[in-house]
Amino acid sequence: MEVTLNQTNQPINPRKKRKSLGPWQLAFKKLLKNKTAVFGMAVLTFMVLVAIFAPFIATHDPEKSNLSMTNKPPSKEHYLGTDGSGRDAFSRLVYGARISLIIGFSAMVFTIVIGVTLGSISGYYGGIIDSIIMRLTDVMLNFPFLLFVLLIVSILKKVNMLIFVSVLALVSWPTITRLIRATFLSLREQEYIMSAQTLGLSDARIIFRHMLPNAMAPIIVNATLFMASMIITEAALSFIGFGIPQPAPSWGNMMSDALNVRVLRFQPWLWIPPGMAILLTVMSINFIGDGLRDALDPRFKKE
Amino acid sequence: MLQYTVRRVIGMIPILILISILLFSLAKMVPGDPFSGDPDPKIKRDVLERQRELWGLNDPIPVQYMSWASKMIKGDFGVSLRYKRPVSDLINERISNTLLLGSMSLFITLVIAIPFGIASGRRPYTLVDYSGTVFSNIGLAMPNFFMGLLLIYFLAIKLGMFPAQGTITSGADYTGFRLFLDKLHHLFLPALTIGTTGTATYFRYMRSEYLEVAGRDFIRTAKAKGLPERMVVYKHTLRNAMIPIITLLGFELANLVGGAIITEQIFAIPGLGRLFIESVGNRDYPIIMAVSMISAVAILVGNLLADILYSVVDPRIRYY
Image (cartoon, rainbow over all chains, first blue to last red; front, side, top):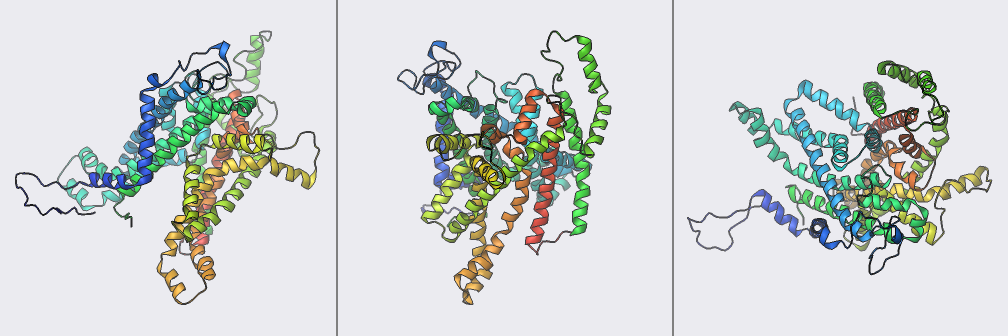
């Protein structure tokens, strides 16, 4: 870790606490120096703002179809034209940011919660609980991810956002669990954990106060990268019609129009913009994740 | 080594059994069966009921599982409820397309990623390196289906260089080698689509591994003793930098079916992925279960292969 020196040589005012940066602040400073990460944060902030202020940006109701105005090319009235049901593609694109980001974010949170809980239990207690959880991850990890999601989505009659997010989390927790378990296994052998145990602290306190904060760096990095892959998964599933059902706009289900050769060929304005939106969002989240990895890893030194 | 392999193969059995149980229960939870939904109103209720009895759909679940599992071990996946044909026939017809697609995409991936990764690693922070990194960042963020649509739009529709859909030119009765070439021509775009993410990943690995190995002491020694640059690069650096890449190949096998689902859909390729989606829509669970089991086995074998390859290419690693 770097040590910040008081470089201004001013006499230290004893009443004012000298400010030295904590590890998180240091990491944040490092992150701000990373150009691609800053680019990523800027793009993501833009997308989040679009999602929040969607009602003010959108020019039409994204779900209202107008059968007298179907398949219109881009115009002043409809910036990106209208789709086969006469819905305004631009407004759908704007509202799509909401659904994609909310799903990506909440699927990530769900996955992390399940993964961290099971991973900590498994890594801290070991023994039979650990074996059971690990066999479970074996089974899940040896099951093809997309096939699994498709199967579950098809079992459920009606898919809404909450169910969809739960399914994604239910299928993807094992990777996080494995990671947390591995981190905990090495942390468990450290002296300060042993001393905490000797002091008679409760297991919950040891896990939450002493172990989890030390496992935070890999959790944050993986959470970020996970969010990106969740956004892609949502889009892919909605694209083939197993995700967020119409008429709710999601970037993935907007693109499913392009499965129709006529749309693919003659109305590229309907499917290229949502595709670019997914690409940009995922790329910027990946940049942030990579930046966080570099910033949070004390071994990593940039020349 | 042999002992290790045998132990691993035996270790796969309980996982496969658990997967098959999980799969079977999931498939049984799919609402309805092929005889529910909107049957022709002219068909009488008791006829439908007799059909259910005939297909074993009224047996207790554990009985159904046992009969399915014991048949499956013998390679009999049952009869498709929709096509009324043996599932193994349907799979045999389609698996070649998926396999060909998978091997082509792997080939494209390696041919692009390895040379560019080496070039970037040899001259880091140059134009070659930066453009490689930009492309790999795009490739990692690119959704498969968007890539596929873009390729169809630009290369197939606008430029007409490749066919947009299918696996063979309809109407042209090619045979032998000509047929094979025709297939390759059709499968090039889908293979490129599937290979995008892989290319980006392998490029990154190749570059960072090369950089890491090139900084090691034994490379400096090799240079110091006056070995020609070519020898240093190919014999000392590359050999070591290739190790993680080769182990990734095992995982490629694991991704065979799962990776092709969406791409096969876009390009209308009759392969396993497309068969799976179709069957999910039709609630045709003999097929659903067969395809899932096949890909689960592919994943298990792929992971094992990765571990074995690892010790083959890197003699420092020994499994006991």
